[in-house]
Length: 135
Image 1 (spheres, rainbow, N blue to C red):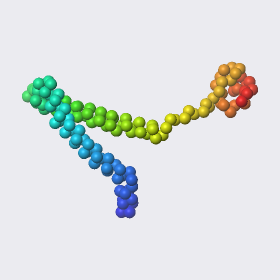
Image 2 (tube, one colour):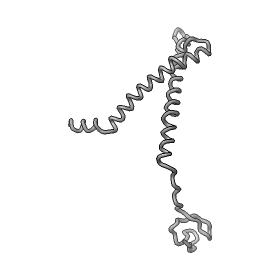
Image 3 (cartoon, rainbow, N blue to C red):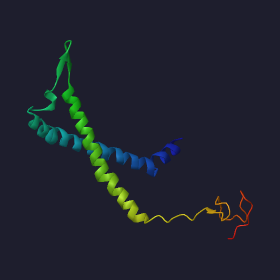
Image 4 (cartoon, rainbow, N blue to C red):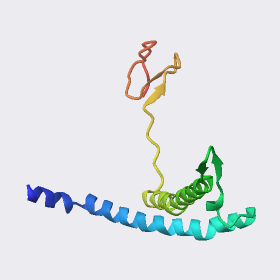
């Protein structure tokens, strides 16, 4: 039983996933710091508030912190844009370069000269009009 667990842990997929989670958490903290320390105060300075955290209102004695929500939305949008523009797009470009152009598939059908129906390329007769087909 322990040998199976050891084999599971040492498989490449598990180690790669662990590294990805650790790097993702570190990357998330960097983007969160960028959002909370640079972008949010810059936007808040434009709107005239010191921080989005200060944006709230009361409803029946309850405090609604919509500024915190705005911070979370900005954080999400920044993380998504960084992942897309710095990981997905370059990786797609790199994979397209490595794989090269995709060759066109040979046609699987041809047109019958008599009835203009689509028939398989290997057909000797048209299945619609039974006319012999020249290869």
